[in-house]
Image 1 (spheres, rainbow, N blue to C red):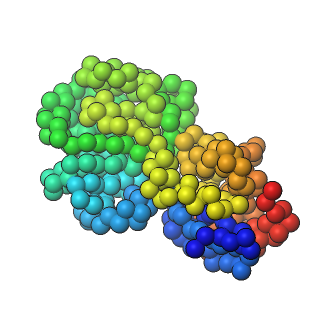
Image 2: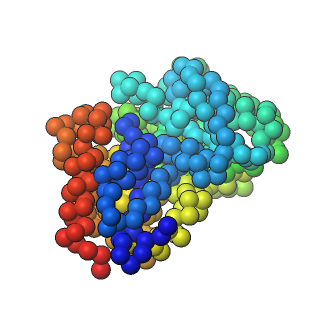
Length: 373
């Protein structure tokens, strides 16, 4: 049921709060806290390629879960899930070998890898899948997807085996077996950022710090990614180092494009299409989006930034709800932070349900004071 002239339509489109809540839970808390006869709420949990995107797309597509065991970023096996509908598999890096599987004390960009993702891809291929959508945000690694690709059949020749992150020691590659094995599989990589593989906006420089990379490690990792790009380019017609989206998830997007002819796309765009976002937007005066930590990186292809552009184009009012926010972000009418109510950031992460009622009440007060133009 769409909003009538007596009701204000509000579209709820939050991303996951990484390390705290998935997008379905955020939608549920917002819907409960904002319930009011004056509003018609449209919960539409969002994903952009990062944490929870596969489950979200599976929800909209009515795909079926498939369980298996695969390695986390430092090689520990655990139970995980991907989704399937017909000959299509939806496989998410974050749920298999993402940063969320590590304690902060375990962050190590020299050892973290993506082998677990390769294991899941092999499982899908061996069970008759012919199309694979890879959701690749939320990674713990900067290995250029080398761990996954080795698991899938890429031959790597290294100077030593000191590091699980292969790009640190890789000297040459042979993709013949990999290409032969996956010649009939169409890969689409859903990316949460549109940044390149290398350089000041690349995988190491922009996202290395949040994965534990030190100031000394970042230039080395960037140089190793450049060397890796040269190896990939020998087997690809693509310009690997600067390809749009190539830096997503530690560079895995660039490698899959180069060696498996994967199509690199915006994960946000896929969410918008399959959720019916634009159709619902036409019935709403307000949109509420958000994620765990809202910062300037949120505007590089991640769902809050994408929704902000759409709302601006359509003159729809936009609010953000988050755990915490960086100062100086001006893309929203207002930003509401859980840390404004919780005694600490840790408490906001561990028990967000305690603070959503207060934040929802503040949103309702704001809506009453600032009716949509």
